[in-house]
Image (cartoon, rainbow, N blue to C red; front, side, top):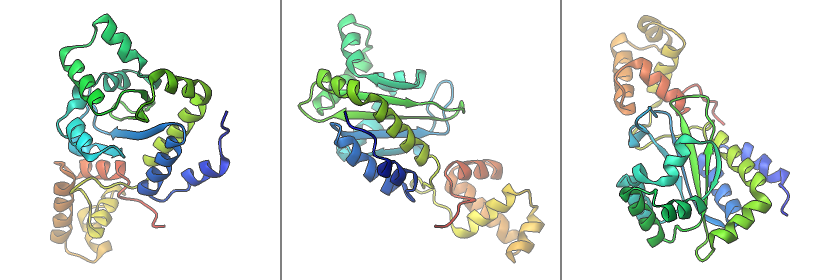
Length: 253
């Protein structure tokens, strides 16, 4: 049985960027037999939706064509393991899919997603759904076994190393949510970040103009552009979303 490597865990917790963290994690998971990963995180989940896909944080080392279809064409809407992750916390073997197929409990849409995955050699693996204290937030990761491995073989790997695998994936998830990330077309300028930070501190437009040495009209322009960049309607929403993305109040390393 592999023991956890304290040096590796320390490197995870000290990563300064999501890119560095993700590269480390992909290599580590591959050493356990999981060579393709798909991580997703949203802060805008509701009771009926995962929210705007443009606000999802997606990390993957799958072939881009697979992600284009699974995420871009929204196949995830009907993915059985995504449905499982939304209702549960912890880890789940994909052996449940076989049980669902054998008992005829898959819907036609779910069956099509399963067939799409099988056609792309996404056949065996595990899903880990992360616990959240927020009703709006949800994160999960799909760990796909190497091509040619059966579910029984990867289940045996999990039997031996499941606790370590859950721990490492939990650490990576928690670290990801603590690091700055910028979604496509949602990056704030330095001035926009600074203005939002002062709003978050409770300063008035007059206060912010004086602090930043700008006119109130210019401050209002920066805030308007920040709202547009983050695709929100109000400045309060912009502060909240920028905080979720760790774009404001961030220490420069």
